[in-house]
Length: 360
Length: 248
Image (cartoon, rainbow over all chains, first blue to last red; front, side):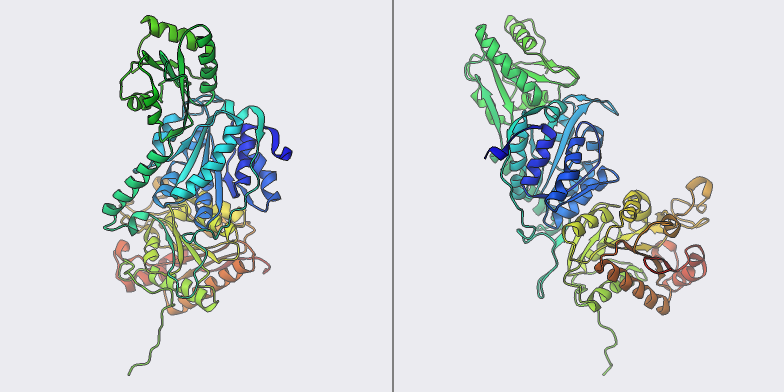
């Protein structure tokens, strides 16, 4: 399997993992820091006989993807921050039409144009946004190049299992870093695998209609309410994914995803060398939020610390709800600066000394 | 016993009412699409993409595969369907509001990329489904709910003419037909047939705009609506074939 072991940039590994998952249509628009996916697809997709379209905008990107998904293809569109905002309408349509798709937001910093450096300011957009209506879309939060690859493979399977879009959310640091990675083997996807996709009908068959699923539910929105609530309940029950380190005996538990979680992992190690019992809950998916992870917190816990590159502290509310407000919640909130492990330990010390200010 | 003189295409089963108003042009325009596909033996293989407007009411009257997307996004989605299933005839059947305003970037870029799909645009000069507001095609001086004093160039900008918009575009086919008379309807059907032939030959974008009546929102009877198309609308939007690859 030596051929599958390579050193790759996160964004390029994402593109290759999508190809190897059977993705044969990519439609997207350039925006830093995700453009490497588009660039990689530009030469790689033709090699496997797929379609790559640099679209006129992100709206065309997501609706071309919508059409291809309706026709049975595995698809991908990716963007970042300002461009990802333009996906919102299409995501709602994918959800409302029961269509699988994989989307990526490589988060950049800031409101408006912001800038191209890393940040984690799109958390609420990606986890709570997703267009109009009652949308809830599974979100993977890989923290390494290998995890980008593994999550991409899982995302395609998950999106077809639930007939629902699935998102990868990672910050620019994860997308731009190069690491060793083991790639999956090539998987060919059959566009006729599912009966629901449009493909033309045979004599005597009825035409398929890919549109609002609610139209086909019993009593329309009465039936749809149950259908969608059940789907979301299944996703919430089945798909909580997280990594815990030292949570059972921790006095302070950090909660972080993406690049921040790598810093926290180092902080846990160093803090324990200093005799401070620090723990980490790292959501591998933030939708559904890993509520079950918080049951593992032991009786020593004096507080939770959200470590997040967000001015508001966008994950704080999810942490408060998941922990059912049983513990005081503190924050190490930055914006463009990647958090530092020493500072994590310093804040943990302040929490234990009663000198830290709660954020929730 | 009367002789049967008209049969609707097999897949246009009208299993549900379309919801079109009396005198609406959609009933004729969509039928032409399905008659052509039927005559070409393509009906079962066809995939039609609708968006959000009166055109989408067809989803409930036809029995072929179809896809419904957001207002203005049908052309983009049709490109995705076609690129996944290049052997199926794919048609975006859409309105003028979506095609020339909210989704105009997809219209222009489908032409620039010469996407191998057929686009049928119903030009009735208003946003029909939402109650007759100004559309990009509304004529100067035409009164609508949002141009109560008549459309003015200063306030509302000038009407968009797809023939001018596509000038210089290297697409397979561009024609404009009308539903104002039997002769016009027959001619429009020929345009639609040519459009699908070009798609099946892989020549690229084939685009047929159809001048169509909206008696409800025009405040005219169905007969007077046809008269208006003939006497007023066709002066601004002339009929004919404007682009045909390989033909000078």
